[in-house]
Amino acid sequence: MIDKEFLRDEIINALKSVYDPEIPVDIWELGLIYDIEIDDEANVKITMTLTAPNCPVADSLPLEVQQKVESLYQVKKANVNLTFDPPWTKDMMSDQARIELNLF
Image (cartoon, rainbow, N blue to C red; front, side, top):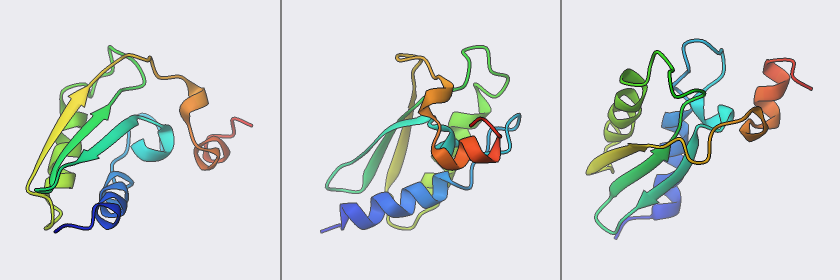
């Protein structure tokens, strides 16, 4: 039996190592990750967005997320779904990201 809470924390830590190349803040703190689902067999489904639909990393960023999550030894398979509903706004950023970007 997998510890989903522990695995979720490990996934979040992995996501914090992925950065939007145009913004010096990781995708977790930017609020680009909408959902993390983990099934009983350690398959992971991540729903994420981008800062804009025409983002230049629309092809590569979801792939990087998938690779980072699948690099965790507990994860069997990762599937990344890209959505723009709801559209990302600066309100989705963490306080830490806002401080980093001087948006207070």
